[in-house]
Length: 91
Image 1 (cartoon, rainbow, N blue to C red):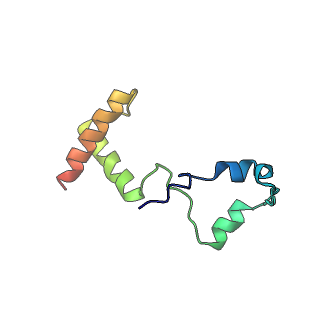
Image 2 (tube, one colour; image 1 turned 90 degrees about the vertical axis):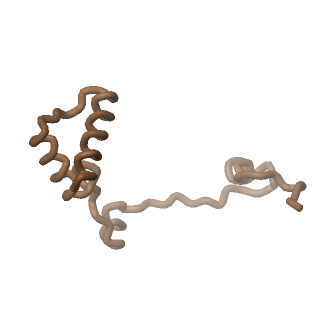
Image 3 (cartoon, helix red, strand yellow; image 1 turned 30 degrees about the horizontal axis):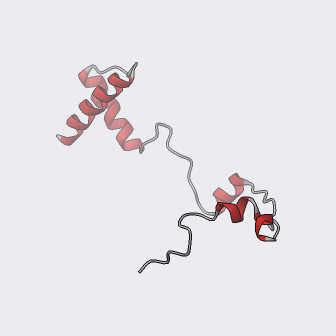
């Protein structure tokens, strides 16, 4: 049987209003150099086109060979995506 005497979800009141429960906010500001942290954990910059270079090259090749243009609308983007995935599936 579930614990019905407890509220479900995140304890937002405890976090945002600790004084309601007779305590204080013990949080401390943290200043992080994100570039230094990323270098320390070996993180890489995101790909230029939002996908791996191999996919971007294959998609561009298909677009050039098939005469596809960059999308100008949401609908154009969906059609291009469908065409690219259809062509890539054949490889």
